[in-house]
Amino acid sequence: MTVTFLSSLTRNSDLDREPYEVAKIGKQHWASGDFVLGEITGPINRLLPFELASGRMVQALRKDSVVGAFGNRSATLEAAGSWMDISGDSMHAMTGAGLFGKVTSLSTLIPSVTALDYKGHVVRNGKKVCMSDFTIGSTGKFNVPTVLLVGTSMSSGKTTTGRFVVHELERMGSKVVAAKLTGAGRYRDILSFRDAGAEAVFDFVDAGLPSTVEPEAIFRQAIRPLLHYIDSLQPDFLVVEAGASPLEPYNGTAAIDELGEENIRCKILCAFDPYAVIGVEKAFGLEPDLVTGPATSTSVGIDLVRKLSGVEGLNILDPDSLPRLREILKSKLKL
Image 1 (tube, rainbow, N blue to C red):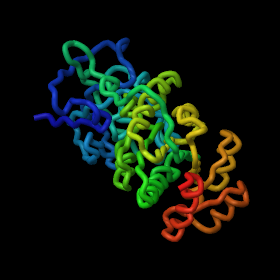
Image 2 (tube, rainbow, N blue to C red; image 1 turned 180 degrees about the vertical axis):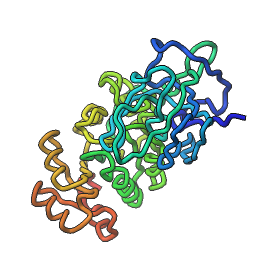
Image 3 (spheres, rainbow, N blue to C red; image 1 turned 180 degrees about the horizontal axis):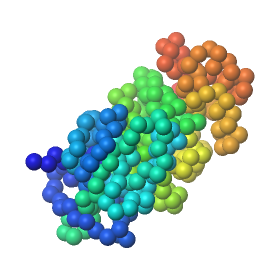
Image 4 (cartoon, rainbow, N blue to C red; image 1 turned 60 degrees about the vertical axis):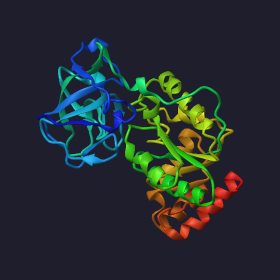
């Protein structure tokens, strides 16, 4: 019996409850966000297991099948590729969340990516099933006081910092919603926000996008109804992570614009090193209220951040820094 896993990109769908068929269709009909089934042919990346719709991680085996979605990835530290680069039936799992495409550039930090054969699209009644069939959204407005987390690169500490921000706001009695508006879909990031105390969590997968490496118009059209829905929940605050950095092709600039300058009350820059703080400030025009991340791991790094940028840095992993974090949040959010 063939084992078929539903990756976390299917988490909003009904594929776990309602029957479907798998059929190959012509490439001229393929698109980002299509649900497809791939059979693992190897090699298998043991460092990047598959993430299921529940958020649980599993080590799939050769000949197992995985339902994921076509999409694009442009990660600075890991891999880049696209569904449009697929030739024949050979493709890759570009993330453990089931983002399928063909990797065209792979970091030496990653030993391999899992190879799959395209077995067909998920179809019902002869029509392909897509992520956009299961979106969350509404019409209206967005006017929620927001804490914005941006980074100098991927793996710069945004999710970790977001967890502490959510936790501190929840401890102060606030109703908090958390969201990740850009990046490549992985459920574990926003699940960690929920574990920290967020009443609800969302990301661009809820808007029907497998990643946000999409044309800006498509991204805005998808993300705006999600922000309207978040507003309808009437949270006291929204904690938003903009995955990767604003200058990477993940639509970070568009995401910040959709949030609205008047709603962003606190800006936290997560930096990999102190000099990167200056790079983001000058290239993007961002004036952060606080710097966290690996750049602030020691007092030397914190002092250098202050010397280079004039911005305060905090080692968010140091329990002694949390009272200062609370002070900053209280001041910026007028608590």
